[in-house]
Length: 79
Image: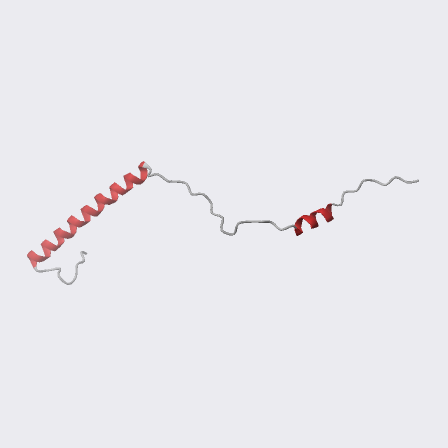
């Protein structure tokens, strides 16, 4: 008489598990984390505002200069 060893049918169980339907929500949304403004961003924003203000002043100066001298109405380039 022989001994029958216990055999795990790994291939069969993997195949059977593959055939089971997996229920997933097709419209699953991931949670969103709230962000906060960092001090570096606020600093950059302030620098940008100052730069924009200085450019506005330069444009006003160039417009005044072109009105006074009569030059620079058509072409506004400095060489």
